[in-house]
Image 1 (cartoon, rainbow over the protein chains, first blue to last red):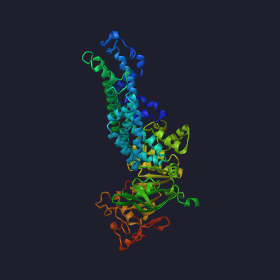
Image 2 (cartoon, rainbow over the protein chains, first blue to last red; image 1 turned 45 degrees about the vertical axis):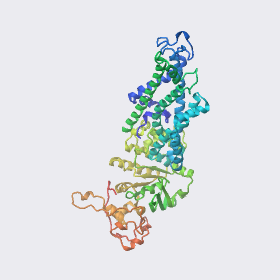
Image 3 (tube, helix red, strand yellow; image 1 turned 90 degrees about the vertical axis):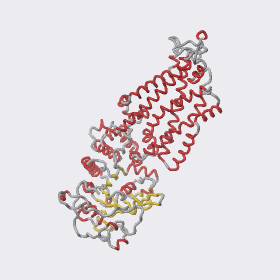
Image 4 (cartoon, chains in turn purple, green; image 1 turned 90 degrees about the horizontal axis):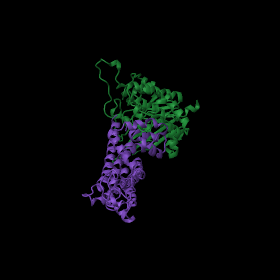
Length: 295
Length: 342
């Protein structure tokens, strides 16, 4: 547990003098993490700025120009009703990424907290929490989400409810096992010996140390969640038309894959790019972590 | 000097047990020690003799599943074992400090050195931000960190072991505790650094009237800094005495054995055998009747089976658990030197 430079930054525990190091943290990242981060930044910006950069409205029809291929005026071509696929992809990306963030990071915080508490106190607290976590992890994820959708009806609401119910459990398990190691460290003993409260010991002293691996894992989790979202939209269980989701655009374009390949392929490529970007970032960060430990 | 006569810390009849699947195991069986204000007491013993447990009992920091099953721990007349959790927190925050063996894991890797100190000052002493910052720099300077202004911005991994131990000392003594528990603070350090840290502890103890309970298995360390020494064996205190008195004439055969098994520089080149203590330390699972040291003791008598391990005075400041006292009046054992390890 020597360095934490890589991921200490998001938790920002030391505001007074943090600024001086920030440049170094980014510079010290491995190249692949930088490339991955750059890809994600571009994708997130594209989603965030969709209303500004999309050349057409997401449901703007142009019946004179149906199924026109990629060109200067329609970067990703148009679909069967003449809607601009590029614009639709941007809006879909905006919606999907917002959902992905919402179903990845709040459960991460909850999970890390639960895991930290379980690991710190041990004994009966740990036994009870660990069994709940096991139950959650054992539950078939997709089935649960579909079941929730069956109750609340199709649309993004099902994902927003269904995913977090289960997603925290993996983070809890991860954080718990890290906490078991951490609590044997002398600086955790020191928090008791210095008379700190348990709350302070867990939240301020343990949590920043636990967040690292959870944040690394979350890059993969985001991809899993994006794919889940795309799958559900593909099945017609996601955002309802005319709102676009990456999955629903791909699903729409599938029937014309041979005649108008761009409708399904290009938005699909965006999903792939997101996966690669997140993968590179996660990989690079865990390499960086390893490198830090070896120092 | 009547106030000084009241002990700062008094541990009496302490018993620490660990519940295991095969019944309970006693790490400390029946041990007691008293400390005066500002004194440096060495607690020496082999691995497993219970010295660390003894030290941690003062703060009620016994690792699970251990627990204190008997005895009293009193600090300035207050019963530590009866404290409520909030009293205990305040006691840990203000009255006692603790430093550990391994300086590499005793500081939180995600915080800058300065911020760890500032946090302690703010939380435990309620200082304001600016005040705590100034005080933290003073503390760092006081424990010998050069250029504290700049170094306080460093992370622990950028410090050497000795520097980290200095920071740890600053942290543990930030709230001006009256007692510092030092659990083998120099074991992980090289000899030069060790001497510096010991000097620092001695200086702080003298300047701030802070008592230090120094746990060590190194008689050389004890000789260098301690006023008095308590020798631990098998969960009991075998002998307590001023350091000089122990070297003049240890009363307990175990203390004698320890001192004799230290290699002597004068003996270098001569083909003499280094005396050792025969046998192995007692198994904490077994409860022995009588003296725990009897199986290894060359002076053991049949009556040793009836020995209670209670400390009896030899002179006003010297007690021993050995009623046989084979060396009484026999004079000095050898003088130990640094590096003399148990």
